Image (cartoon, rainbow over all chains, first blue to last red; front, side, top):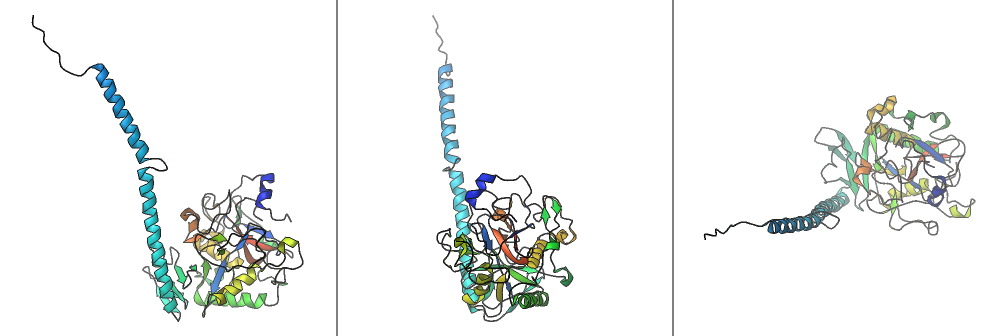
Length: 45
Length: 338
């Protein structure tokens, strides 16, 4: 699996001209936490 | 001799007049337009006034929330229903009080959530997402709840699912998790208070947990990741930190992410989203270049009143991808994801 990139690393790789769907799945090691790793909270009764 | 005087303007006078008029027109256009032009400033003033008005309404809603000590039934103008949790109140801002548009609720601390209706029990499951215009084939690798996850992962999933089906929906953070300070690699080892508000820094540099089956503080990996509380634990702590009495908080589940996609585009469940669907191609509807934006940075990046479901930061979910990784959704600044 390719590890997450830092913003500073991205310039070396450029970007790919592909669509950017909100529904897409990506994946990462659970202990990985880069500048681009965040989260969203849900509430349940 | 009779010299008759000819009256009128000379060609020179006419040219000078035209030049003067052109100069005046140029000055007027420059004054009206441009970054500091009257029109631009008037537009900014209008936006600032509207924003101040909205902020005031949100403050009033937060005050009201503090007085709501029990769950309240809610019916909007369309006849759609939801339950408002104790400690919350419905936003008074126009366009934020119907379920179809995205019902926004606010707690006493100003955190904002949006109701996601789940109308058909059988539809509450994970679906293949889209990649490059086509449905992916990743679900066969994914699992939720992850069978080899942490001790209470299964029971928490069951509790979440029962709640969603009993109440016909759930609430999701209107924004990516945020915090007051700008997190960077040097200060990311400190746990900051998590907020779900507009205009603050994204809570980044956050792992999911320590291992696939451990949501404790990271201790045994690369130095950069040690000593950090992960997204699962931070999410679970959120409800208690904010004094919620009738709802629990969790990291968003994959099945919930897909419920949001279904809410946005009902064709998602059948894999038949149009090419320009936000669910299938959100280009232009999210931050995909430059630097990490603050939460809720642009109205253009919201749908159903939920911000940054596409682009900006990757968002961890409870779903596993395989035996060594967890699923992140929404894609990030850069096309790679990760």
